[in-house]
Length: 400
Image 1 (cartoon, rainbow, N blue to C red):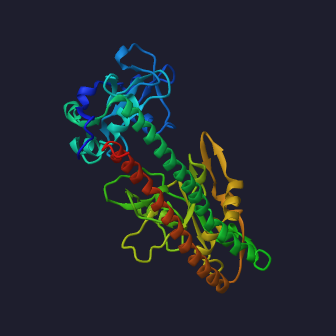
Image 2: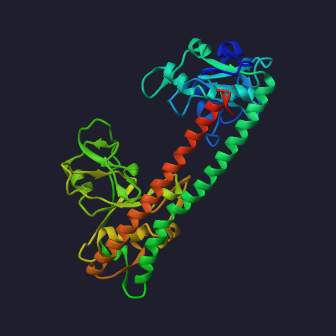
Image 3: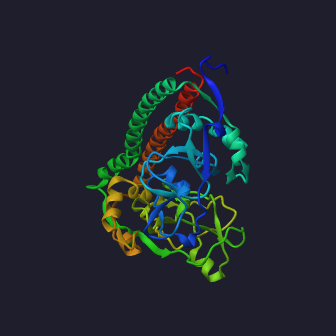
């Protein structure tokens, strides 16, 4: 890459001094005092702080306007350079407090330029696949293109302008994604609304053979015993078998929580309001093993001569079905809950089995169309990161 003749190349070690944060121990964390800035607080402003009220070195104290650089963590989510904007705090280990030589480089230019080298930084890091670190010596050896200060100001302004436009596009995509995610519940609702005046209205309790909570015994990751489905295995209206845990159960306990094809699994308690009441149908036809389920789930086994499990699941994932769940959901100690008695009281239209089969064909087709739309929007949203990277590449090649 050929830089403009007025530009120079500096190593990161020539542009700033890097002071590592303090290694705070968990037993030093408090509920009041000065906030401790950990990597998660840099990457996600919603993450809560831990606090410290003891004696500290001035070199670990920061304030708004200071530059921080995280040099350890998971590639793609933890490495990065930031300007701190949230007041007085203390820096935790694995974060450098960066003292920039402002006669050579502007703070904002330094941050943008350093972030344009994140891939190089990650490549130079060492450690396990999940957690990597870059040494201070390797970090300081990374080179940045540095134009005169006036040109740095112009480049920073231009980057901000471009990034604002990308953010605007992202905002529109988020709105569109939310609208698309609401399409399926709304479309399903139309189907059930058409049945409201002609089909028999029944409650889940009237068509349920049983409702049961899962096992509360401790599970493990070693593949021994019965595989147990948990909250993450009930997602987007389907049961997945990812990241399974296992439990050594007695024959009686295993039989009590053993799942059969057509069983509905409900999330009964969670700190996230939207997760509670989420349901999916278990299909064990082609499975080599028997599966059980954990205590945060409720199993509803229905009389399939009265209702098809998929038909009921579609109702509960419709707009009206979610409203019925919402009206029965309770909260306690920061957790949202729904119990089996609440679930059994939910009413829904129950036409003949033949009519349910016909309606299922319609709803399955509409689900495919809605999921395709959401997938396309997710793909479009991921393009924004590529655009941001391209902006930085051009900026530090003298092309912006």
